[in-house]
Length: 220
Image 1: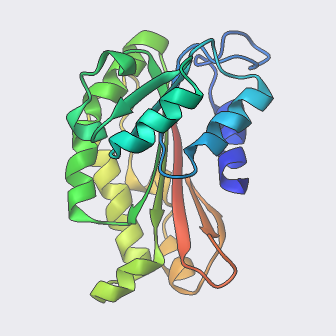
Image 2 (image 1 turned 180 degrees about the vertical axis):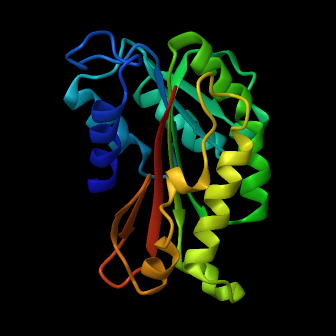
């Protein structure tokens, strides 16, 4: 829940055009969430804070049974059963301005890099519609050691891949890896750092668990 609240905090601090007014109380676009077993916690948080437009939440999950259960509980919001990367043309995604990719994949995973390139259309649509697009992408940082990869180097490659995937989408500038992850961050990460480094929050999911790397960027 701390991570979820942090996503909303960054959205309020860094986004301007995604909000209906200068007080940043109500979102103009939809919030899309990869649900898993706990995605309703995000919906609960957003509704407690009153930031969603009517019906302004899209939940997606690979498990049709799980989505059916969510739909029965909350028929007033949008639900998609399937792989996000194969359903990018779904009409439920037409108004998305915020995407929370809380998939708990591994930082630097090659398949994730390929998948992310497919999201260009979703990001582009949000930028054209709202002038901004917010991306939160939460991944496992420490698990890369199973493949004998350095954590810091893996996160740098991840930042590089994100920038390459977004090349040409932003009207005013191009993202660089150093904007997302400051130079020298690799050594801090390898030394066990937790906290904020550039656009990444490095945190531990449990007291003795793996560190997670949550990318938070608002594109405009």
